[in-house]
Each structure stands twice: as structure tokens, then as C-alpha cells.
Length: 97
Image (cartoon, rainbow, N blue to C red; front, side, top):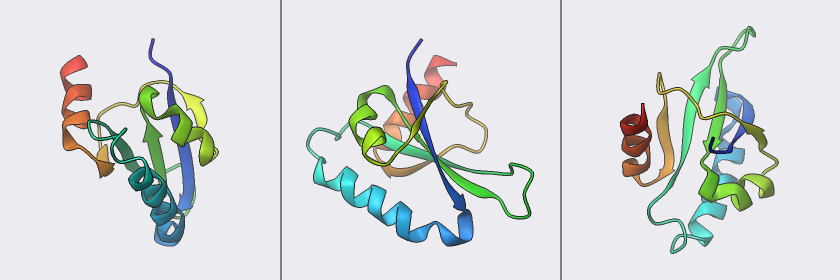
């Protein structure tokens, strides 16, 4: 099983600054990350507002560690989108289902 990582950025309306930081870190490694992406989903975790959760595939373990992401299983496809990177990474994930 592939080891994925998740980082909950909290209230989606307030997550912009942290999302920008993750995107900047991703861009610094653009050549290494050309064929991959950080994925995202707005999730309702029982709180008043939905939260923005980022998902890092196995090849982005170093970036995940840099932002404090926790190990998790491969995310389901429902509501999943690309935060930054190649949209092909999301398509590859769909092909595995």
C-alpha cells in the first residue's frame, strides 16, 4: 500500500496563507515535482465550517514532512482536486480505482 500524507489547514476560509506557503515550497522543487501534485478537498469534519485538507502522494513525502502532514491512506476521489501541480496525478489516481 502506498503511504500518503494529509495536512489539515483548518477553516477553508482562513487557510489561504498556509496554502500559499505549501505552493511556494512545491514550486521551489518544481523540477523534481513536474509529474506530481498536491491534492486537496474541502471536508466537513463536524464543525461549523468545512476544512481544507491537503493530500500528498508518496513521492512528496519530503514536502509533506516539511509542512507537518501526517501519514494517512490513499484518499478517495470524491471531491478531490489539484491544489498545485500536474492534473495528470489526479487522473492517475482515478485510473487506480
